[in-house]
Image (cartoon, rainbow, N blue to C red; front, side, top):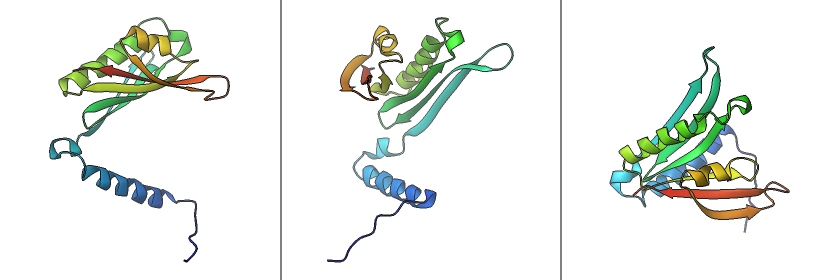
Length: 141
């Protein structure tokens, strides 16, 4: 048996690997869903035009994955996070998503998501060291 070499991938090689997995996944997803992929990214700016809050999310197949929800530390507790969360939830409902999923850390906002109806799915302890990594889901159907 010949020995295989493990190499650091170039960006082009990484894109190739990603495309191969996307093609494999598409073969196992209904035609109705296989091309459903859309980034949904929004921000809130102050009077000076500076971004004070933002959300980055991805609609994929029959769900929406909330990747990042950030509010500037000086702007917290003004409802900006809730506004952004409600915006993406509304779009997810309009686009007939079944659920939203996200992850957050113990030092971030687990209570915020619970307050908005998200259910804790699992917890990974000591990730990063001394903290917890939480995974949440909210059913929309």
